[in-house]
Length: 280
Image (cartoon, rainbow, N blue to C red; front, side, top):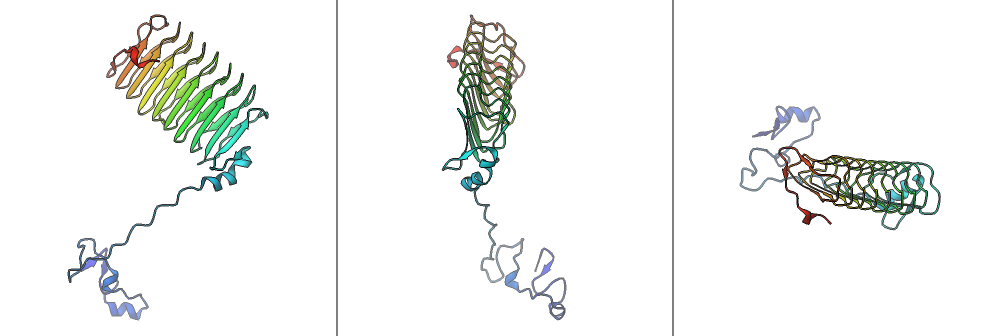
């Protein structure tokens, strides 16, 4: 009986000839055939287990090796913390790869781009006026961006994390586009501040989209969703001043009477079911 081109008593020919040539002796118990799971005497053949999975990443060790050089401080759980709530930061922020990151930006701080694409997860807090004045990008398992300072988050926000939670919660926050791209799974965008989300609001998440334009003149650009399950809420006074459109499998595009949108577009095969109950 042979397996994978090997004879049970030798290699590619007579066992004695190979022994004379210095080839290793191949005994019957060393060979496991693919066609028969048992040996001739009825006993089970030995099965070699697959090698074990690679050990999990040691976030604390990786943080210690990469975070300080990027300008952050390691927390006890291996999170890289960039605290610029008071200390000025006028250069780009790059979160190290494969570890969680937390970024705190205070008044008129974090004036350059924030790149959290490679982090395992990311939480970005732009909590005071004019914080986070350049573009923000994030990925990983989950990303939270909190633009809770007046005029904070002045440029584009792009999330490709598995779960995205983007909040533009105060006056004139989020001056650029707010987008969940195709890399994300579930996306929730809240434009709840007066005049928030001045650019387009878009979602191409692979699972679900929720876009909430809740306050006066919020969502000044186009609002689009292509997720299999999407909800668009235009409930603020004069909210959703551009087009409102869905191209996914099912969508709830609700435009309240006080909003600017009047006839949301649902392109086939989207099923449009406007329902106010889904909106805050």
